[in-house]
Image (cartoon, rainbow, N blue to C red; front, top):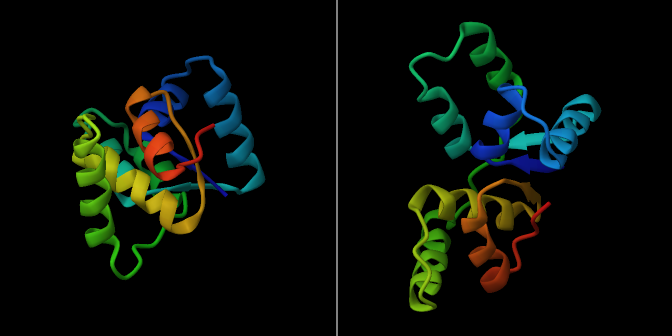
Length: 124
């Protein structure tokens, strides 16, 4: 399984090129792509999102929220802040979801590097 962040999903949906888009396309084809609930929320927040794209997004499986997720996410964010990073809450939630399921994250967002360094989040 591979989880996609919003930044790479937007690139894929927008027809942009890039290694992340290639990996996402392959993961979609192979049935290996998953999304966090936060990513789905961010994607569906686009008021101009076409209904067909929304329907496609909603067919992609999601990573479940496991017991203690919110507490672990809070502690992960605190660790990042303690180490002088400024993590967004949404990014923290996506990172924790991937960490809980030991799933790699495809992203264009460099902010996830903090979670890679501090918690071992695997990035593609």
